[in-house]
Image: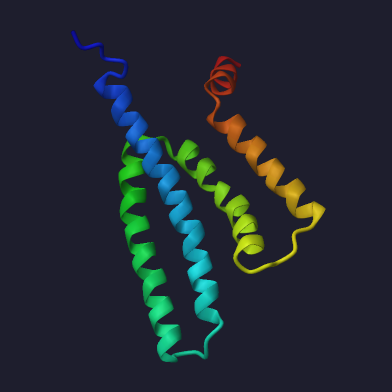
Amino acid sequence: MKIKLINNSNHKTLKIYLLLIFSVFMISFDTVIFKTASGYPMLSKEFILWYALALSLYFFYAIFWQIILKHIPLSVAYSIRCIVVVLGLIWSVIIFGEQITPWNVAGATFILVGVFLVTNKKSANESEAS
């Protein structure tokens, strides 16, 4: 006897949200690739290779974004996309050794709180009731 824990609708929604999270990581890392390209002389072989990689990644991101928007409200998808700013801070420290300030941390915290408020069903239901 098989017990189905996730019905097809929930499974599809889960896949879309996982695609959204993957896309957020993809676009945040795309910025790392663009920054890496900027470390080479303009139109050098290395610059063109890094830039081509970044544009290729951006192309796939755009396709994934269209799939996501077909299934998730723009307000939710775009607010989750804002996590790119937080990931950008993380990548800047881990990959480029940049320093972050308390203001960066405060801003990232506000972004995460905002994403929570926009995507939280209870908050959305409360605002619809008013």
